[in-house]
Length: 401
Image 1: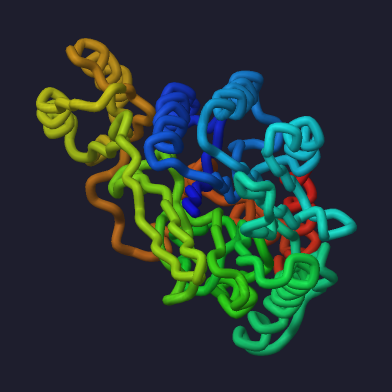
Image 2: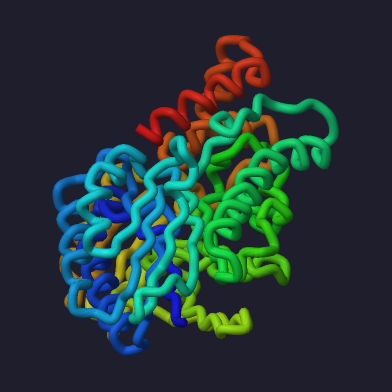
């Protein structure tokens, strides 16, 4: 049995308001070809199908055209679960129609939770694997209302309802389909992921670094995870992240984009291989003086299908009026021409006094919602800790639609 595990498509995403539609179109075309070439039976998309809970018409068109294109592939089943960026209700709306085409969608967890279970039939009509298709689940829906104490105690308390949820679904699946291999999905951050990997804490983990990996029942032979945009195995377990298929920012542009090809033998033996997704374009940062930037951009060449996206950071002694426009005109004169996705001036030499540095404001676009809210609380002399849980709940409800 071959399973292809991908996640975090973020259809409709932009980089500094520049569309990534062409990048996604290339990826989805390659993905369809790979499903055929590798004779894949199950495709799993572990959350964040869309970049927004209200995706554009173009992003939805890409999604549905891709699903339609799967009709002449060897797929036996496609599993799609919602992430924290998705609207659960929007993903779930066509689920009954898509089920007729062997596409099992779980946008959000509802009662009964058995709807998460998807038996996959082989060519003879027999169930040969069961997948617990678990989307992003807010801890409030599992009855968690916070816990005081040490970080270890908080982490364990937060993990308990998730562990119970996964174990309950494993029990249901084993009771109904005894002896059949079990797989699961998840859209969350578990221990071993850094704050750089998951800058938005989608559960109330603060600085805990993620949920404990013990939440995953050992009866699941493979757990397909989303939310972290980097591909790796979680601590020697059967839980894996596949990473995002396109570089969504400069940092992600520094490493190849991948997905996981999983071979599950009848005896439960697992083999996981990273498939490198052919890059459609580079995402680069170019920093230095204006002269340094010009030299680097003049020498920029590429073999990819699409021109590179470039963020330019002009290092200056002091702000120079008109320098950004001069840089834009220079880039427009280049042939071949990269795509400019950001241009700022920053001081080459920052003041060393910490109090002076603290007074230098960050750009709003560089801040996470939690940071903005914290700053607002400080400005109004309100306690961030007292209001944090209510703020997190409102943000989660907005994301889930």
